[in-house]
Image (cartoon, rainbow, N blue to C red; front, side, top):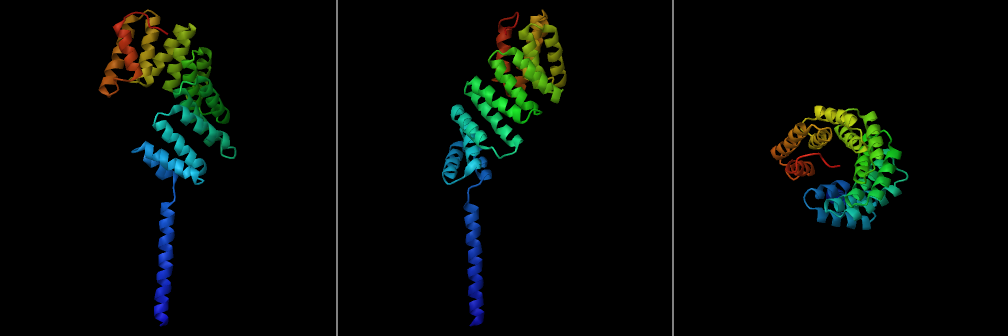
Length: 255
């Protein structure tokens, strides 16, 4: 009899363990939520919102923002990232800066450049030595035509990462628009020497060459942009489209 009781007691313990494991497996997780983004963004959004409603906290909110971004809902995503970043007062500065940067990128996609610049400024304040945030703000400022700001941010990024092709290309763009073509040529040449197949760098070097009267060199760069884009399946890339437009209308590149 005691043996039967022992067996029943052991079975009860095992069942309890199995039920506990099943309950744990059913618990929402950030990993499960973000994994859905790759295959089913609408389902990821629903998962995140349901999790958020059941006290999912910051992890659920972040997954929701990522899902909104994946679905092209830039305004909502930006607001979600911003709300999350503002509430992360106890989080490490680096983590909070990353979320502010995500908010800035989303605001830029939503064409709200003022909020994009503000959010990226918060990221820079929290992580001043991270060049990617400077580059992000430089891109936003370029969209707004704030060329002095673009040059300043690109230069700060280069102080931290001297071989950054993005920063060199952005500074070349700023210098060209500020009326310093020789300095722009130097940055553009260096960018292309580091990354000979970089579409943006080649496009900008072509622009600078056109500005300085080297039309043949400019056309060669733009032809390379189109060729490299085609070879890598990126013919719809904005740089390739811009290069095609320049080649269709030869002459001095526009700003």
